[in-house]
Amino acid sequence: MSLVSLRGRASGPAGWFAWLDRPGDQGVFYVRALLWTPRAVHRYRREVQRLLSEVAFGSGGLGVVGGTIGVMVAMTLATGVVVGMQGYSALQQIGTSAFTGFASAYINTREIAPVVSGLALSATVGAGFTAQLGAMRISDEVDALEVMGIPSLPYLVTTRIVAGAVAILPLYAIGLLCAYLASREVTVLFNGQSAGTYDHYFGLFLSPVDVVLSFLKVLVFSVLVILSHCYHGYRAAGGPAGVGRAVGRAVRTSIVLISVSDFFLSLALWGTSTTVKVAG
Image (cartoon, rainbow, N blue to C red; front, side, top):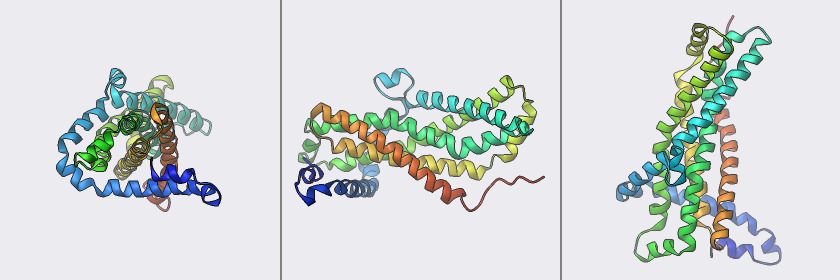
């Protein structure tokens, strides 16, 4: 049983504030897991390679639907269609529907695609990691690793962080392209806008700097998501039901982390300056 759960059962004033221990324990866990990165990359390279395949293509039922790639493509296509439809409809009301390409280049790149990719990673790979580590914890496999002299934190957690951070970049590139394609096709094919007009404004306002910063955002999201899911799986207790509760807590925590970090990252990256300038 973890230190946090023991403190949570304390009675009196100490028990009232025991919930404050969990954020501190979570923060220490995050720092320790990240500090193990050099060792994990050096010593557990084969495990990282195995996890790369699992992150990208999934395993079991997730593999049937194309793994994380399939889920991310489906979600980014859907949101790209929404951006194209709503962008065209809103801009048409003020006579500027030609700028739908700008809406796609701006909204998909900066906000929609990174957030959707982070949520897709949480719903697929993240939930799987929580279940895996939780099952290992309740069956004493984590303790068995420690007995064999294998530090469980770098082997089980840090390797997953490295694999997720590496795999998310090509996955996100595919998802971002799908969002661009969906917005373009719904604008050109269904709304009847000229392909040349759309492509002109899309290329005019799509900044390479924005694309690079968009990759940075999704990289941060992936690290936070995997840290959160691995923490709740690593600290799972209470049998199979406890693993189920850990998965639920991990998903909720990931959604909050993505939302909060998206706000601060957007503020830091684009809050005081812009790469887009519109002049008449």
